[in-house]
Image (cartoon, rainbow, N blue to C red; front, side, top):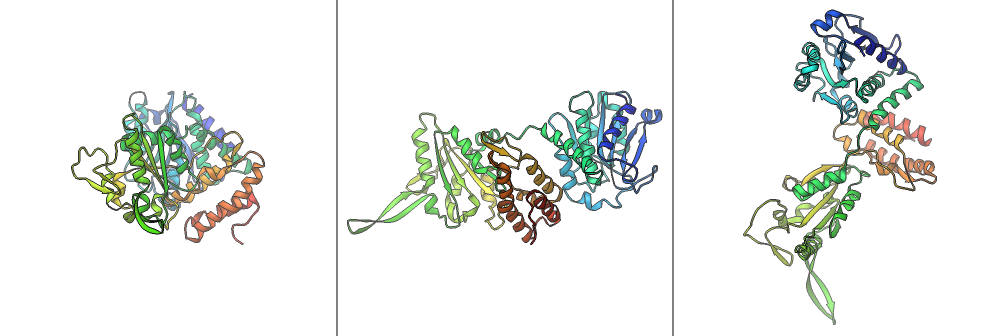
Length: 465
Protein backbone atom coordinates (compact mmCIF):
# COMPACT_ATOMS: atom_id res chain seq x y z
CA UNK A 1 0.00 0.00 0.00
CA UNK A 2 1.18 3.56 -0.64
CA UNK A 3 1.57 6.20 2.06
CA UNK A 4 -1.90 7.70 1.61
CA UNK A 5 -3.55 4.27 1.79
CA UNK A 6 -1.56 3.50 4.94
CA UNK A 7 -2.63 6.78 6.52
CA UNK A 8 -6.30 6.05 5.78
CA UNK A 9 -6.04 2.53 7.21
CA UNK A 10 -4.35 3.78 10.38
CA UNK A 11 -7.03 6.47 10.78
CA UNK A 12 -9.78 3.83 10.56
CA UNK A 13 -8.13 1.86 13.34
CA UNK A 14 -7.58 5.02 15.39
CA UNK A 15 -11.32 5.70 15.26
CA UNK A 16 -11.97 2.17 16.51
CA UNK A 17 -9.72 3.10 19.43
CA UNK A 18 -11.64 6.31 20.14
CA UNK A 19 -10.00 9.01 18.00
CA UNK A 20 -12.34 11.98 17.55
CA UNK A 21 -12.29 15.75 17.37
CA UNK A 22 -11.22 17.09 20.71
CA UNK A 23 -8.93 14.29 21.94
CA UNK A 24 -6.12 14.62 19.40
CA UNK A 25 -4.79 16.80 16.61
CA UNK A 26 -4.05 15.02 13.34
CA UNK A 27 -0.79 16.01 11.69
CA UNK A 28 0.13 14.91 8.14
CA UNK A 29 2.88 15.81 5.69
CA UNK A 30 2.74 13.42 2.76
CA UNK A 31 3.48 15.86 -0.06
CA UNK A 32 5.67 15.00 -3.04
CA UNK A 33 8.24 17.46 -1.70
CA UNK A 34 8.35 15.76 1.70
CA UNK A 35 9.09 12.40 0.09
CA UNK A 36 11.72 13.91 -2.20
CA UNK A 37 13.54 15.79 0.54
CA UNK A 38 12.80 13.37 3.37
CA UNK A 39 10.61 13.84 6.40
CA UNK A 40 7.21 12.56 5.26
CA UNK A 41 5.04 11.64 8.23
CA UNK A 42 1.55 11.48 9.71
CA UNK A 43 0.32 10.98 13.24
CA UNK A 44 -1.48 12.29 16.32
CA UNK A 45 -0.49 14.85 18.94
CA UNK A 46 -2.08 16.25 22.08
CA UNK A 47 -5.41 18.08 21.55
CA UNK A 48 -4.00 21.27 23.15
CA UNK A 49 -1.51 21.72 20.29
CA UNK A 50 -1.91 23.67 17.04
CA UNK A 51 -2.62 21.97 13.72
CA UNK A 52 0.74 23.12 12.30
CA UNK A 53 4.11 24.43 13.43
CA UNK A 54 6.15 23.31 16.41
CA UNK A 55 4.46 21.34 19.17
CA UNK A 56 5.16 19.95 22.64
CA UNK A 57 5.10 16.55 24.32
CA UNK A 58 4.67 12.94 23.26
CA UNK A 59 3.01 12.00 19.98
CA UNK A 60 2.34 8.93 17.83
CA UNK A 61 4.02 9.23 14.42
CA UNK A 62 4.48 7.05 11.34
CA UNK A 63 7.22 7.78 8.81
CA UNK A 64 6.14 5.93 5.61
CA UNK A 65 7.80 5.14 2.31
CA UNK A 66 5.91 6.69 -0.60
CA UNK A 67 5.32 3.49 -2.55
CA UNK A 68 7.46 1.13 -0.52
CA UNK A 69 6.84 -1.85 1.66
CA UNK A 70 8.08 -0.39 4.94
CA UNK A 71 7.56 2.37 7.46
CA UNK A 72 8.74 3.47 10.88
CA UNK A 73 6.21 3.61 13.72
CA UNK A 74 7.46 5.79 16.55
CA UNK A 75 6.78 7.60 19.79
CA UNK A 76 8.10 11.10 19.26
CA UNK A 77 8.50 14.26 21.32
CA UNK A 78 7.60 17.52 19.63
CA UNK A 79 10.57 19.71 18.70
CA UNK A 80 9.47 22.25 21.33
CA UNK A 81 10.20 19.70 24.06
CA UNK A 82 8.09 18.98 27.12
CA UNK A 83 5.24 20.99 28.59
CA UNK A 84 2.84 18.46 30.17
CA UNK A 85 4.50 15.07 29.66
CA UNK A 86 7.80 15.38 31.50
CA UNK A 87 6.54 13.37 34.48
CA UNK A 88 5.32 10.69 32.07
CA UNK A 89 8.68 10.23 30.34
CA UNK A 90 10.80 10.60 33.47
CA UNK A 91 9.50 7.29 34.88
CA UNK A 92 10.22 3.90 33.26
CA UNK A 93 6.53 3.15 32.62
CA UNK A 94 6.27 4.56 29.08
CA UNK A 95 9.40 2.77 27.89
CA UNK A 96 8.24 -0.41 29.61
CA UNK A 97 4.75 -0.31 28.07
CA UNK A 98 6.21 -0.08 24.58
CA UNK A 99 8.95 -2.62 25.17
CA UNK A 100 6.30 -5.22 26.00
CA UNK A 101 5.06 -4.81 22.41
CA UNK A 102 8.28 -6.13 20.88
CA UNK A 103 8.19 -9.37 18.88
CA UNK A 104 10.91 -11.65 17.60
CA UNK A 105 10.28 -10.73 13.95
CA UNK A 106 10.61 -6.95 14.29
CA UNK A 107 13.29 -4.28 14.60
CA UNK A 108 12.95 -2.16 17.75
CA UNK A 109 14.86 0.83 19.07
CA UNK A 110 14.51 2.59 22.44
CA UNK A 111 16.26 5.41 24.22
CA UNK A 112 17.42 4.49 27.70
CA UNK A 113 16.36 7.94 28.93
CA UNK A 114 13.07 9.20 27.47
CA UNK A 115 13.76 12.71 28.79
CA UNK A 116 16.72 12.93 26.41
CA UNK A 117 15.91 14.91 23.25
CA UNK A 118 19.49 16.03 22.67
CA UNK A 119 20.74 12.91 20.92
CA UNK A 120 19.37 10.35 18.48
CA UNK A 121 19.31 6.54 18.62
CA UNK A 122 22.37 5.62 16.52
CA UNK A 123 21.26 2.02 15.93
CA UNK A 124 18.04 3.22 14.26
CA UNK A 125 19.82 5.18 11.58
CA UNK A 126 22.30 2.34 11.00
CA UNK A 127 19.40 -0.03 10.33
CA UNK A 128 18.02 2.11 7.50
CA UNK A 129 20.18 1.06 4.57
CA UNK A 130 19.46 -0.25 1.09
CA UNK A 131 15.71 -0.29 0.38
CA UNK A 132 15.12 1.70 3.59
CA UNK A 133 17.49 4.57 2.74
CA UNK A 134 14.63 7.01 2.10
CA UNK A 135 13.47 6.49 5.70
CA UNK A 136 16.93 7.48 6.89
CA UNK A 137 16.21 11.04 5.75
CA UNK A 138 13.29 11.25 8.19
CA UNK A 139 15.51 10.03 11.01
CA UNK A 140 18.13 12.66 10.11
CA UNK A 141 15.48 15.36 10.58
CA UNK A 142 13.61 14.02 13.61
CA UNK A 143 15.99 11.49 15.15
CA UNK A 144 16.66 13.43 18.36
CA UNK A 145 12.92 13.54 19.07
CA UNK A 146 12.28 9.80 18.54
CA UNK A 147 12.00 8.03 21.89
CA UNK A 148 11.03 4.57 20.62
CA UNK A 149 10.62 3.17 17.14
CA UNK A 150 9.97 0.00 15.19
CA UNK A 151 10.85 -0.56 11.54
CA UNK A 152 7.81 -2.27 10.02
CA UNK A 153 7.68 -4.54 6.99
CA UNK A 154 4.13 -3.88 5.78
CA UNK A 155 4.13 -7.02 3.64
CA UNK A 156 4.65 -9.28 6.65
CA UNK A 157 1.80 -10.86 8.57
CA UNK A 158 2.73 -9.08 11.79
CA UNK A 159 3.42 -5.68 10.19
CA UNK A 160 0.12 -3.90 10.65
CA UNK A 161 -0.72 -5.60 13.99
CA UNK A 162 2.44 -3.99 15.38
CA UNK A 163 1.25 -0.57 14.21
CA UNK A 164 -2.19 -1.24 15.72
CA UNK A 165 -0.72 -2.24 19.07
CA UNK A 166 1.57 0.80 19.21
CA UNK A 167 -1.39 3.05 18.37
CA UNK A 168 -3.59 1.29 20.94
CA UNK A 169 -0.95 1.89 23.59
CA UNK A 170 -0.91 5.59 22.69
CA UNK A 171 -4.73 5.68 22.81
CA UNK A 172 -4.61 4.16 26.32
CA UNK A 173 -2.00 6.70 27.32
CA UNK A 174 -4.23 9.57 26.22
CA UNK A 175 -7.47 8.08 27.60
CA UNK A 176 -9.27 7.81 24.27
CA UNK A 177 -12.60 6.10 23.85
CA UNK A 178 -15.62 4.65 25.58
CA UNK A 179 -15.76 1.20 27.18
CA UNK A 180 -16.06 -0.60 23.83
CA UNK A 181 -13.21 1.36 22.27
CA UNK A 182 -11.01 0.79 25.31
CA UNK A 183 -11.68 -2.92 24.93
CA UNK A 184 -10.58 -2.62 21.28
CA UNK A 185 -7.34 -1.06 22.49
CA UNK A 186 -6.76 -3.84 24.99
CA UNK A 187 -7.44 -6.55 22.40
CA UNK A 188 -5.01 -5.01 19.89
CA UNK A 189 -2.28 -4.96 22.54
CA UNK A 190 -3.04 -8.47 23.77
CA UNK A 191 -3.15 -9.88 20.22
CA UNK A 192 0.41 -8.72 19.67
CA UNK A 193 1.59 -9.85 23.09
CA UNK A 194 -0.09 -13.19 22.42
CA UNK A 195 2.18 -13.75 19.38
CA UNK A 196 5.28 -13.51 21.54
CA UNK A 197 6.96 -16.78 22.38
CA UNK A 198 7.27 -17.30 26.14
CA UNK A 199 10.75 -17.32 27.59
CA UNK A 200 12.07 -20.88 27.67
CA UNK A 201 13.14 -20.85 31.31
CA UNK A 202 14.15 -24.51 31.42
CA UNK A 203 16.44 -24.11 28.41
CA UNK A 204 18.02 -20.95 29.82
CA UNK A 205 18.74 -22.61 33.18
CA UNK A 206 20.27 -25.66 31.53
CA UNK A 207 22.46 -23.45 29.33
CA UNK A 208 23.62 -21.46 32.37
CA UNK A 209 24.46 -24.63 34.31
CA UNK A 210 26.61 -25.84 31.43
CA UNK A 211 28.35 -22.47 31.31
CA UNK A 212 28.71 -21.65 35.01
CA UNK A 213 27.55 -24.70 37.08
CA UNK A 214 26.40 -22.41 39.92
CA UNK A 215 23.15 -20.51 39.26
CA UNK A 216 20.81 -18.35 41.36
CA UNK A 217 17.17 -18.14 40.25
CA UNK A 218 15.70 -14.88 41.54
CA UNK A 219 12.19 -13.54 41.28
CA UNK A 220 9.00 -12.56 43.08
CA UNK A 221 6.71 -15.08 44.82
CA UNK A 222 4.83 -17.34 42.43
CA UNK A 223 7.20 -17.00 39.47
CA UNK A 224 8.22 -20.66 39.67
CA UNK A 225 11.77 -20.55 41.00
CA UNK A 226 11.61 -23.79 42.98
CA UNK A 227 9.30 -25.40 40.42
CA UNK A 228 11.80 -24.80 37.61
CA UNK A 229 14.74 -25.91 39.73
CA UNK A 230 12.98 -29.21 40.45
CA UNK A 231 12.02 -29.57 36.79
CA UNK A 232 15.65 -29.20 35.70
CA UNK A 233 16.67 -31.67 38.42
CA UNK A 234 15.09 -34.46 36.33
CA UNK A 235 18.22 -34.30 34.15
CA UNK A 236 20.39 -35.48 37.06
CA UNK A 237 21.10 -38.88 38.54
CA UNK A 238 20.59 -37.52 42.04
CA UNK A 239 19.25 -34.32 43.61
CA UNK A 240 19.80 -32.97 47.13
CA UNK A 241 17.67 -30.10 48.49
CA UNK A 242 18.03 -27.85 51.52
CA UNK A 243 15.91 -24.82 52.41
CA UNK A 244 17.75 -22.03 54.17
CA UNK A 245 16.13 -20.04 56.98
CA UNK A 246 17.21 -17.60 59.67
CA UNK A 247 18.51 -20.38 61.94
CA UNK A 248 20.39 -22.35 59.28
CA UNK A 249 24.01 -22.87 60.35
CA UNK A 250 27.30 -24.03 58.90
CA UNK A 251 26.80 -27.41 60.54
CA UNK A 252 23.38 -27.82 58.88
CA UNK A 253 24.80 -27.17 55.44
CA UNK A 254 28.33 -28.57 55.64
CA UNK A 255 28.46 -30.80 58.70
CA UNK A 256 29.64 -30.88 62.27
CA UNK A 257 29.64 -32.81 65.53
CA UNK A 258 26.56 -33.70 67.54
CA UNK A 259 26.00 -35.51 70.86
CA UNK A 260 24.68 -39.08 70.76
CA UNK A 261 23.48 -40.99 73.84
CA UNK A 262 24.49 -44.65 73.61
CA UNK A 263 24.37 -47.20 76.48
CA UNK A 264 23.94 -44.38 78.98
CA UNK A 265 27.09 -42.77 77.63
CA UNK A 266 27.28 -39.43 75.87
CA UNK A 267 29.38 -39.50 72.74
CA UNK A 268 30.09 -36.99 70.03
CA UNK A 269 29.92 -38.08 66.41
CA UNK A 270 30.70 -36.31 63.20
CA UNK A 271 27.84 -35.97 60.72
CA UNK A 272 27.52 -34.66 57.19
CA UNK A 273 25.36 -31.79 56.01
CA UNK A 274 23.63 -31.49 52.64
CA UNK A 275 26.72 -30.17 50.87
CA UNK A 276 28.86 -33.13 51.95
CA UNK A 277 26.08 -35.55 51.01
CA UNK A 278 25.90 -34.00 47.53
CA UNK A 279 29.70 -34.13 47.13
CA UNK A 280 29.83 -37.79 48.15
CA UNK A 281 26.96 -38.60 45.77
CA UNK A 282 28.81 -36.85 42.92
CA UNK A 283 31.94 -38.91 43.62
CA UNK A 284 29.92 -42.15 43.47
CA UNK A 285 28.39 -41.46 40.03
CA UNK A 286 31.44 -39.79 38.47
CA UNK A 287 32.85 -42.89 36.73
CA UNK A 288 29.45 -43.65 35.18
CA UNK A 289 29.26 -40.10 33.77
CA UNK A 290 26.48 -39.10 36.13
CA UNK A 291 25.80 -35.66 37.52
CA UNK A 292 24.38 -34.48 40.86
CA UNK A 293 22.37 -31.33 41.58
CA UNK A 294 22.26 -29.47 44.89
CA UNK A 295 19.27 -27.11 45.29
CA UNK A 296 19.52 -24.38 47.95
CA UNK A 297 16.02 -22.96 48.35
CA UNK A 298 15.64 -19.38 49.68
CA UNK A 299 19.39 -18.86 49.89
CA UNK A 300 19.11 -15.27 51.13
CA UNK A 301 17.04 -16.20 54.21
CA UNK A 302 20.17 -17.32 56.04
CA UNK A 303 23.20 -15.43 57.29
CA UNK A 304 25.39 -16.50 54.37
CA UNK A 305 28.67 -15.43 55.93
CA UNK A 306 27.99 -17.82 58.84
CA UNK A 307 26.48 -20.65 56.79
CA UNK A 308 29.06 -20.77 54.01
CA UNK A 309 32.09 -19.66 55.99
CA UNK A 310 35.33 -20.72 54.29
CA UNK A 311 33.63 -22.84 51.62
CA UNK A 312 33.18 -19.69 49.50
CA UNK A 313 36.58 -20.80 48.26
CA UNK A 314 35.08 -23.90 46.60
CA UNK A 315 32.39 -22.14 44.55
CA UNK A 316 34.66 -21.36 41.65
CA UNK A 317 34.33 -22.61 38.10
CA UNK A 318 37.23 -23.18 35.69
CA UNK A 319 39.87 -22.74 38.40
CA UNK A 320 42.26 -25.38 37.05
CA UNK A 321 44.26 -27.45 39.52
CA UNK A 322 44.48 -26.29 43.13
CA UNK A 323 47.08 -27.65 45.54
CA UNK A 324 45.67 -26.13 48.73
CA UNK A 325 43.09 -28.43 50.36
CA UNK A 326 40.28 -27.13 52.52
CA UNK A 327 38.73 -29.09 55.37
CA UNK A 328 35.01 -29.33 54.59
CA UNK A 329 33.29 -31.31 57.32
CA UNK A 330 34.74 -34.82 57.13
CA UNK A 331 36.32 -34.19 53.70
CA UNK A 332 39.47 -32.46 52.52
CA UNK A 333 38.83 -30.67 49.19
CA UNK A 334 40.47 -28.14 46.93
CA UNK A 335 37.38 -27.73 44.72
CA UNK A 336 33.88 -29.10 44.29
CA UNK A 337 33.47 -32.14 42.02
CA UNK A 338 33.14 -31.21 38.35
CA UNK A 339 29.92 -33.22 38.11
CA UNK A 340 28.19 -31.32 40.92
CA UNK A 341 25.96 -28.37 39.93
CA UNK A 342 24.20 -25.97 42.29
CA UNK A 343 20.93 -24.08 41.86
CA UNK A 344 19.92 -21.56 44.52
CA UNK A 345 16.62 -19.65 44.64
CA UNK A 346 16.10 -16.15 45.98
CA UNK A 347 12.92 -14.20 46.68
CA UNK A 348 13.28 -10.62 45.40
CA UNK A 349 10.06 -9.41 47.05
CA UNK A 350 11.02 -9.97 50.69
CA UNK A 351 12.89 -6.79 51.58
CA UNK A 352 13.64 -8.01 55.12
CA UNK A 353 16.01 -10.70 53.88
CA UNK A 354 19.79 -10.55 53.91
CA UNK A 355 21.54 -8.83 51.04
CA UNK A 356 23.80 -11.17 49.10
CA UNK A 357 27.36 -9.87 49.12
CA UNK A 358 29.53 -9.35 46.07
CA UNK A 359 31.76 -12.33 46.87
CA UNK A 360 28.84 -14.71 46.35
CA UNK A 361 27.48 -12.79 43.37
CA UNK A 362 30.77 -13.22 41.52
CA UNK A 363 30.67 -16.97 41.95
CA UNK A 364 27.13 -17.52 40.62
CA UNK A 365 25.24 -16.75 37.43
CA UNK A 366 22.06 -14.79 38.21
CA UNK A 367 18.85 -15.50 36.33
CA UNK A 368 15.71 -13.46 36.93
CA UNK A 369 12.39 -15.23 36.36
CA UNK A 370 9.80 -12.66 35.32
CA UNK A 371 6.05 -13.27 35.52
CA UNK A 372 4.77 -14.58 32.20
CA UNK A 373 1.72 -16.34 30.78
CA UNK A 374 1.84 -20.10 31.37
CA UNK A 375 -0.02 -23.04 29.89
CA UNK A 376 -2.16 -24.82 32.49
CA UNK A 377 -2.05 -28.56 32.88
CA UNK A 378 -5.13 -30.75 32.50
CA UNK A 379 -7.61 -30.00 35.25
CA UNK A 380 -6.30 -26.46 35.78
CA UNK A 381 -7.32 -22.97 34.66
CA UNK A 382 -4.93 -20.08 34.12
CA UNK A 383 -6.73 -16.74 34.54
CA UNK A 384 -4.87 -14.99 31.74
CA UNK A 385 -6.94 -11.78 31.57
CA UNK A 386 -6.65 -11.12 35.29
CA UNK A 387 -2.92 -11.89 35.20
CA UNK A 388 -2.50 -9.33 32.41
CA UNK A 389 -4.43 -6.75 34.44
CA UNK A 390 -1.86 -7.14 37.21
CA UNK A 391 0.98 -6.99 34.68
CA UNK A 392 -0.44 -3.79 33.22
CA UNK A 393 -0.66 -2.08 36.64
CA UNK A 394 2.93 -2.99 37.50
CA UNK A 395 4.22 -1.94 34.09
CA UNK A 396 2.48 1.42 34.37
CA UNK A 397 3.28 2.39 37.93
CA UNK A 398 6.16 0.35 39.35
CA UNK A 399 9.71 1.59 39.56
CA UNK A 400 12.42 -0.76 38.32
CA UNK A 401 12.92 -1.97 41.90
CA UNK A 402 9.18 -2.35 42.54
CA UNK A 403 8.82 -4.45 39.40
CA UNK A 404 10.53 -7.24 41.38
CA UNK A 405 7.43 -7.37 43.61
CA UNK A 406 5.00 -8.46 40.90
CA UNK A 407 3.15 -11.69 41.86
CA UNK A 408 3.97 -14.59 39.58
CA UNK A 409 1.60 -16.66 37.43
CA UNK A 410 1.06 -19.39 40.03
CA UNK A 411 -1.21 -16.95 41.90
CA UNK A 412 -3.52 -17.04 38.86
CA UNK A 413 -3.60 -20.82 38.46
CA UNK A 414 -6.58 -22.69 39.92
CA UNK A 415 -8.33 -26.00 39.57
CA UNK A 416 -10.67 -25.99 36.60
CA UNK A 417 -13.66 -26.90 38.75
CA UNK A 418 -15.20 -23.83 40.42
CA UNK A 419 -12.32 -21.82 38.94
CA UNK A 420 -14.09 -18.44 39.15
CA UNK A 421 -14.89 -18.84 42.83
CA UNK A 422 -11.39 -20.13 43.59
CA UNK A 423 -9.81 -17.16 41.80
CA UNK A 424 -12.08 -14.76 43.69
CA UNK A 425 -10.98 -16.30 46.99
CA UNK A 426 -7.35 -16.04 45.95
CA UNK A 427 -7.84 -12.37 45.12
CA UNK A 428 -9.39 -11.66 48.51
CA UNK A 429 -7.26 -13.83 50.78
CA UNK A 430 -3.88 -13.96 49.04
CA UNK A 431 -3.33 -11.20 46.50
CA UNK A 432 -5.12 -8.35 48.28
CA UNK A 433 -3.22 -8.88 51.59
CA UNK A 434 0.03 -8.95 49.60
CA UNK A 435 -0.76 -5.69 47.82
CA UNK A 436 -1.92 -4.06 51.08
CA UNK A 437 1.39 -5.02 52.67
CA UNK A 438 3.30 -3.44 49.79
CA UNK A 439 1.28 -0.24 50.09
CA UNK A 440 1.73 -0.14 53.89
CA UNK A 441 5.50 -0.25 53.33
CA UNK A 442 5.28 2.78 51.04
CA UNK A 443 5.63 0.80 47.83
CA UNK A 444 3.58 1.12 44.62
CA UNK A 445 1.81 4.23 45.91
CA UNK A 446 0.90 5.45 42.42
CA UNK A 447 -0.85 2.14 41.72
CA UNK A 448 -3.14 2.22 44.77
CA UNK A 449 -6.24 3.47 42.93
CA UNK A 450 -5.80 0.98 40.09
CA UNK A 451 -5.48 -1.91 42.55
CA UNK A 452 -8.52 -0.68 44.50
CA UNK A 453 -10.56 -0.61 41.28
CA UNK A 454 -9.36 -4.07 40.25
CA UNK A 455 -10.21 -5.75 43.57
CA UNK A 456 -13.64 -4.11 43.67
CA UNK A 457 -14.60 -4.99 40.08
CA UNK A 458 -13.18 -8.53 40.16
CA UNK A 459 -13.97 -9.59 43.73
CA UNK A 460 -16.45 -7.03 45.08
CA UNK A 461 -14.21 -6.05 48.00
CA UNK A 462 -12.64 -2.75 49.01
CA UNK A 463 -8.89 -2.44 49.27
CA UNK A 464 -9.35 0.01 52.14
CA UNK A 465 -11.90 -0.50 54.89
